[in-house]
Length: 267
Image (cartoon, rainbow, N blue to C red; front, side, top):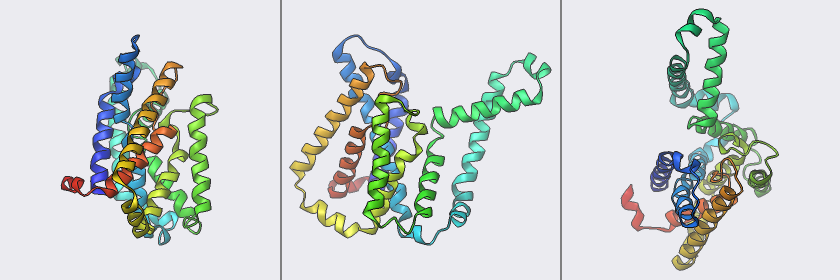
């Protein structure tokens, strides 16, 4: 999992370095395909972070209650998140407010602006992952008696599939940073992987490298093609992590890392 985490970190950093490229519009098809190829590299990591989080939750899910899990993660995750979010929101507030507003507007104006900026940092930038992962963890703990059931996994997968379709119809917000329920399935998948690790290892050993490499290549092409298509029809977030093709590609990456021996030097 350390190798997968490292690759996922690289992907997420790469994706955030290319934020301007995601909003760019090119007239030439070859430029648009280059755009798709580069942007897709920055979308593989997100799904795998939820798989990793579920993997490390593993057997511990049965020992937690909602209250005990929040207490367990409070000082290591929740409090640092709140502190840094507050710091950056305060910086944003001071950069936004004018001297005239400070002198003449009420304190409630500043509080409302602080809340709006905080929401923007969470849902429009990179602060969304912590509440999303906490949300998914609490869902699994709440239904810990059902987590071993594949019917429960299918139910979560159907919710994730809904978000895939929603990208095209926008029944609800299609933005991936607001699609918390879409990721619970992948945390369940990581948890299931940990609980059935020997089974998964035996399964991966039986898969030929040629077949896995071909599936990964096909998945990457499909992910680029879907992103390219969504870009063409003018979707606000054409390379959202919740795309079905990106989900498939992320799982292929997981399988490749599990099967690979030569990648272990990354550890």
